[in-house]
Image (cartoon, rainbow, N blue to C red):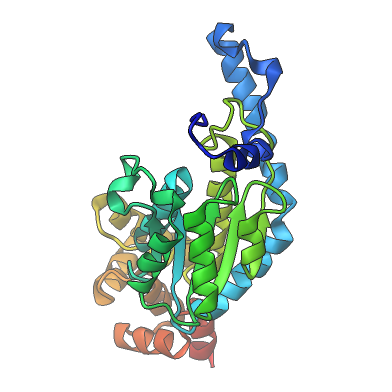
Length: 311
């Protein structure tokens, strides 16, 4: 909701945004049976994938640009406020256990800092200066990518992050849920997933948040596929940091090789639990040190290492 003391120009700007539009046909939603409300929400959500689909060429172009830089050592940095910032932090935090990435390679910045993940930090999203300071702490290089995430596409923190990153020569992506957004216009790659007005007026944690999650899933996952973090649809760079992941590691090696349990255990032991190396020892018939060398020579791409081993 907009506070009466807010500037009229900001109020008018928000009222012009699709994500902030009021839907009079839903004004009585609080009087409906719970199942009817659930059906309404489900129906609203069903349109999100189509809105994402309309942006797939832009998403793919952005992924290729990110992967090219990350292959040279660059980082992927998300910057957003509120829900958008939390989604970036979530996506970044899931990359190390899923793809065995260094936590410094995919970073989530949220306006107001880590405490803003669980608590609203008043005024943080309105500060482009805060975004610049947060990015300067990372010492950005032209090999890095900064993804500004904002449902409205006007959040000063996200727009400021993209503008500052671009001034430093970094690749920039602007992910918004309104057309003709300042965020997309400021970025090298603009992605605008227009999902329409929310069930609850202005509650962009709903459809807009779902759309952002889907796009961030694509940006990180497909980038990691391009970087050789998978073998087919298997997560061969998974980090076996708990019992579930250790069991998954054995299953991944089994699916990739078809080897019996004893051979799988031997391969994992010989390679220190590294799934990708274990697969290579089994499929190429090499020892652990040779597998490590072949993977280093192939930039971590298992298929390329197998091709080298097959000579």
